[in-house]
Length: 486
Picture (cartoon, one colour):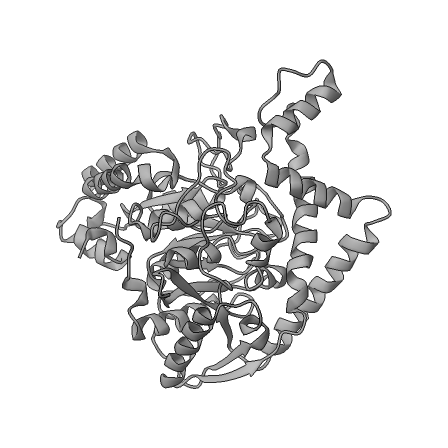
């Protein structure tokens, strides 16, 4: 077994027994990145010098003899829209190409306190807008399972890095499925926490009422470890929830006997590939065999989730991205002759096509005369979608369906037709609109050798049950052990 295939607990043991040093783990990560990233293009920035200094410091401290952080000495990759002190943070955009933050996002402070080591920042769709990581201003990341295919988005760099064993685990952000979808396409685990459980302070905003930060890992147990580090109330974030954080690791007891599982028929309907339906049905039989009670249920407003998401998300984006005007944040065009022209030139040159498309969509939806017809109506539908989930969770412990209606598609296949790309969010966007937690875990490969993701959704702040079901399924199968050959 490669050291990259080991779980966090196994790495802790290896460090404790001095079978490996922190410096050796860091060196192994950078060696793997140098071997493979010319093919993958998963990283935008490497933090090699600082990471090696930190590793040497931890080795000299010998902290294993005393109290240690939960992620002691373990390398982590971080999506490039999470602010990292004195490590370039671009959000995949030319607008922030040279941004050198003077502070850490709260999640990075917590990662540092756990004694994990940042190895680099991963590629992403610009400002989180896209489902393929083709919309980065800098490079296109490819899928480690087949380099002709996309890794998903917008956390495609993080998912590809974990799948390719460049990083032991990573952070992503999820606005409409941006952690779970690339996790499904790349055959790894991706967890979107309840909105408000993990601080958004220091996350470069796309849509503030939908954005969440979460882990991308090789297995469910590692996701529980990372969430234990990330989840906490943050006074710097007004949307951060002040709730008790349970012990997610002890919840992984493998027992799902008597648990009630709802399977929304809308998530297995028209538009979902037959091979994906078959994999989901096999997964449900596995859970039934373990004693779970599986029943078909309905989320009647699911068909409105994608149009609702693509009204609310761009509306919030058009507001959030107004700050990038060449004066307060980001690049400034040198070609404008007056203030207004400078604004126009800066935003024309700094933003890519997908970002401009969503800014225009959002500005239109919020404009006078159209607000009631689009934005207000979308908010009303969002309430109905949330109520659908609330009613089902009164009777069911979790809901299960596919993470995506298709597997990864070829690079360039949907660039000219963004509506087709948007429809791939049909299984994930309802979760963000309702603010509930959900995880994607591998549930097999198609005949073409591409991974399929199983999505498990839970009640608000009930990540423990979501992780418990995912872990139990994982223990009965070996899908999470499959890895791409590079």
